[in-house]
Length: 173
Image (cartoon, rainbow, N blue to C red; front, side, top):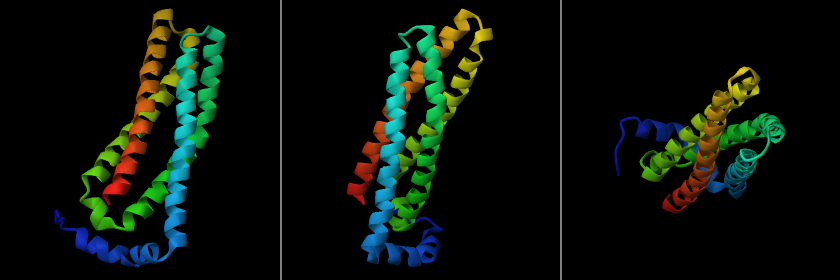
């Protein structure tokens, strides 16, 4: 196992939590369950919004405008889910810090999560630009909608890959 200089200190600091997590089915089930539930809700809303966005790309201007409003409305539940995912993810990681800190599966999942958050930021910026697109030339609007297509496909991939990485991580640890 890879030895990281700070790992022993971190293990010592997290020992009480690791003990509570390992010795309580209620705690471990609650934290893991909340993590999976947040992934289901956040990912489910995001995947549904991505699907609707991809469909709206072939629709008229009115449908596209409606979809922009829908995208805006979906941000809050997805962000709340991401906050729960982050909090429960930290608790899960601290339950066995030595295993996770040295696990390639864990770091692959973390890279996917960072990419997912970056893609979400790109989505928000693109959605805002499209909301102001009335003043943009037709070419600029088409370019923004094309960007939204890429973002939606990336989101579908990243949510799916993150779920798969979660399963691999669970089985590898």
